[in-house]
Image (cartoon, rainbow, N blue to C red; front, side):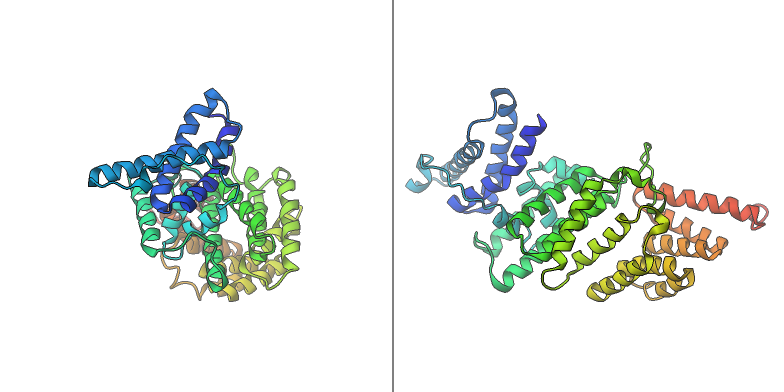
Amino acid sequence: MPSGVEDLLRELAPQVLGAIVRRYGAFDAAEDAVQEALLAAALHWPQDGVPAKPRGWLVQTAARRMIDQRRSEQSRRNRESQAVLQEVPAQKVSEEDDTLIVLFMCCHTALTPASAIALTLRAVGGLTTAEIASAFLVREATMAQRIARAKQRIKASGVPFRMPTGDELAARVRMVLRVLYLIFNEGYASSTGRELQRAELSEEAIRLTRMVWRMLPDDSEVAGLLALMLLIDARRPARSNAAGDLIPLAEQDRTLWNRTLIAEGVTLLNGALGRGAVGEYQVQAAIAAVHDQASRADDTDWPQIAALYGLLEKMTGNPVVTLNRAVAAAMADGPSAGLALLEGVGEPLAGHYRLDAVRAHLLEMAGDTKAALAHYRAAAARATNLPEQRYLATRAARLKLRAASDGLTRKPGE
């Protein structure tokens, strides 16, 4: 399918779904009908050409699918209902864009993050179930069940098709941002599999976040999240080599970084910081901006980054933030400062490869080669992403050679 048609369908998918849900209700049935309409368009438009009013074409096609579904249900139940047997109205299709309402429904607080991610990518992102399953390395049947359960939970919740208001709006915005953040993270740093990153997921997260930002331009955390994504994604071209191996931030060729994305991210961040309270996504974006604005790794303002991580730690209480703060503290004040911070995260992150990886890095900085080697090996054994596993194993191998040159050889027969 031509990329132009694919991009158009992804843009129109949530708008069409919103129109169908608004007209017929029944989110689960409407979502299925829209997916069938998108499939029909994907089959016909590349050959027949994109219709003059593609959104109207999709709405009418999905509406026919809805009526067909209801007719089938009526036939099975042996009942007649004039309302569901009526022809598709010839009225003009409303131009109202319900994308944001659809996104808020997909990110309903009744759903788990995993279910909300899957439903968002399908209903708002326009991805097929097979594409989503492939992105998250699960069987298509498993992902289909996850999406089906998510739609059932939305149906059972009885949530009306409208924008939430007041406290409900604030809670749902946080959930939407959380879901988009998780999608981006999985794309930028895949948790499992043979690929270091999945560009299609991070790009989709950026597209959807741009959409939310256009609709909520005064929300500083929406702008902060978009800035964060752009500032991090700008480094993607330099983050791996031709073989797909990980290149750490300090060793990246910064001339490969996307300066256009960096400039856009910094502009967004500066605008967000001038409005209202500062949230966690803005702080993360500020950290990313400090990294991106350093022309060389040696020019990085580590004291500022350490201070920002301290603020983020107070906001979130997240032990992973403490890991990052430990690295920043080590770079600013020496490895002993970083190692001291790790003492408080041993229990919540027990068994997580990143704890071993950070500890190994700081021990290596401190000159404790033998201990660093042990932690690199432990981190490599626990990592589930193959490029990260290879990187950690390579670090261990290099330290082993260094240990040998320093006289820290293995025992005979080991």
